Image (cartoon, rainbow, N blue to C red):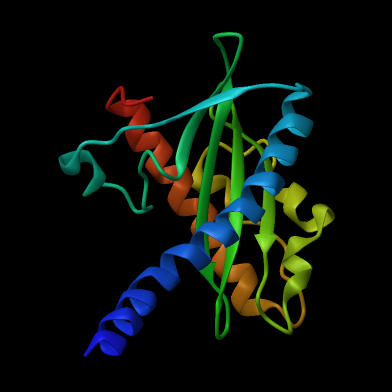
Length: 174
């Protein structure tokens, strides 16, 4: 019976330990992208709180754990949004950095877990999102041969966060 209890405890704890290890790896990538984008060596971040009622209106999953205000010496730099999107058989982690006016400053595919379609992580392709602040501006994002599902998924994910940001702005949540 003791063995069962220890094994059960390990099985319950292991996913948290593994997700923490993965998150730490992402933290470094996210930190590097933010510092590079805003040309700062130091910044602080605070999670954006969203009420349950407002959250239900959003197409994206937005919480204090994945949507952040970025500040340097008390001055607003912009915002960062971190999430996952589906690819053909797995998911990929991506980051959207917004300037202080809530236009996209940078997008980054942080971790791509498929054998094919990784081209969506190229800076050249991702630059298409830069400067966009409305979902309707994403209608002409170029396709990539062999990455159709991932392209569509990234485009839809970015559209959803742009719509969510617009709703948050209208409700004075940002």
